Length: 219
Image (cartoon, rainbow, N blue to C red; front, side, top):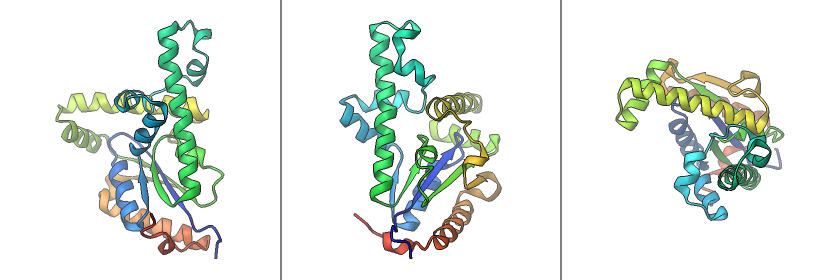
């Protein structure tokens, strides 16, 4: 049996593909911690910055170099304060993700967790996509907007996430070679997608001598 019984499931996702729903359900089934926006809440306290502000820049960095060295890009003092917070947010979130993964079994959604934990042998990396019509319907329902407005939101967030992922990792967002399982949730629906993922994770853990029951109901 593997001495380290902790494991992590990371979920990268297209906007509207059900990443949050899948993540919460997997955390429930395995009785482990779930982290998504919870990371922002912790980061806001550490940085002493309003959580709503951090949410507005979360997963939206345009250029990591521009964040770290804004003056070289013609930034003024106000811009310096803004982009420095972006860079600090990336740093704090990255540290928190690594700390969570090393101290407890958990599900982590987004925020380049798959890349940050790439050297963790007990990390199972997932990327979720979905058909555009299903994504539009989901986002329109969640935000109470028209289908045209939902489509615009989806395209903007996907573009932002792609740029954010590249700015932090230097790699392509959604590249299947960086994940253990890529799944279109439109094919099976959310519940059956969770069934498939759960089975894949259990096989993954079994191959590594990890008993997921030892992580159940942990504090």
